[in-house]
Length: 101
Image (cartoon, rainbow, N blue to C red; front, side, top):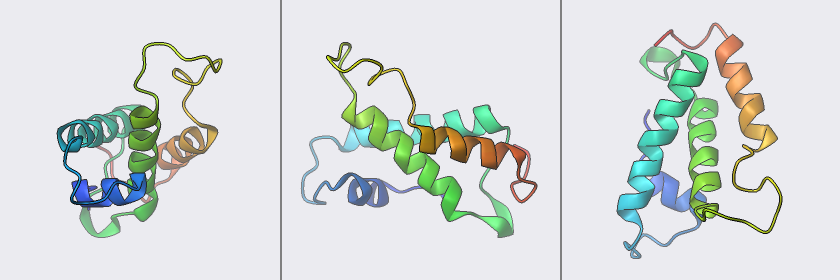
């Protein structure tokens, strides 16, 4: 299952009636899906659709949404992808349950 706008907004704790960032969140979902697919070479389709794959996308969306500035006072806050995301990417890439994409 692809991550929906409603699922991403729920993960980001954005009320559904607040639509100011819907276009941004939608583009982040698309970019995160592309990033996971291109980084791992795997897709989340077919009978083995995984919540773990979707979680990785949601976590990337949250990271990018929360770190939109070009500069941050916190070292590495913008450029460093959280360890949990990199661990999920490694798992997805190495796991045979995900079809090649």
